[in-house]
Amino acid sequence: MSTKYGKCRQPLVSVIIPTYNRADLLPRAIESVLNQTYQNIELIIVDDCSQDNTQEVINNYLNKDKRIISLRNKKNEEQSYSRNLGIEHSRGVFLAFLDDDCEYLPDKMDREIDLMNSLITKPSIIYSNMWIQKEGAETMLPLNKKSKLLTQKDIFSCRYTFMEPSTWFCDKVAIKKINGFDTKIYAFIDIDLLMRALLDGQRIYFLNLPLTIKYRVEGVSTVSIEYISGKEVFLEKHRALLKKHKKYLSRFYYGLAKDFLRLKEFDKAKTYFWQAFLLEPIKIEYLFKSIYPVESHAIYEQ
Image 1 (cartoon, helix red, strand yellow):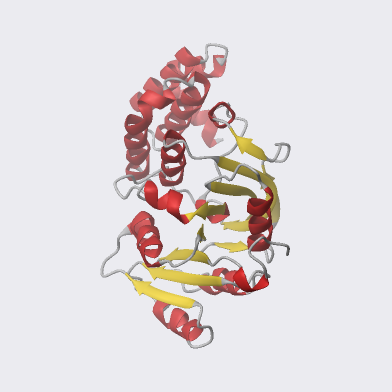
Image 2 (tube, one colour):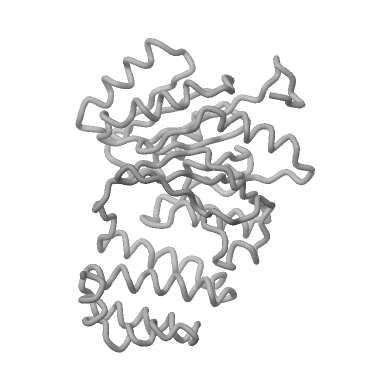
């Protein structure tokens, strides 16, 4: 790797893994960090008060590698709190995050350090592509987008997919400036941070190269009333910004409508399908679903 810091002055990267009751998955994530081709890394594992043998797994690694720091919450605090705790204890110039059901490809850090060095206009956040592995099948999202420094127009065009924190590589000063992750939001926590970064004038770079793998179990759904309520909190927080981007807001309404449809909350689904249609009248299916939410659910279930 060629870097302006030189071999003896490679910047320290702090990788933060929040984990909860994932003792079976955690070793894969840990190993993918420790086996990076870029070795100047500290790994901060934040155990969110797990009730399984997660702490035993962490302790086994603590005895093997001095780059690991172990933190444990006194009670279950959720991912945002755990990530922020990791940030506060980090010593690195750069931050990276990894969920316990994901793993890094071996050259992730090298690739991102090289990219950061090569860019004249330095971004605060680089987010790369990722593989999603489900039932033995692999997909990469998105396939046909250009690697580039994104404008606000790019981001709200619905052409670029916001990738989750496991794909991020961040300037720590920039993340701390916007106070890290919002612990009051239950859903869209990652997108909330990226939007606050944009509002702060920070730059975001999309690298269309898969450097992370996410393992997803078929049939497992994260949709719940709590999750959807979290999305509505996010919507209210950023409504002024989102109203300037009708297409993006329409798709957001549509996503909320589908969530309520899955939970058979037909009145709420109808409302959001209608709002999505008003913003994008060309989407006739939005109109149909706003009029016939029950029938739409029956089609969805088939």
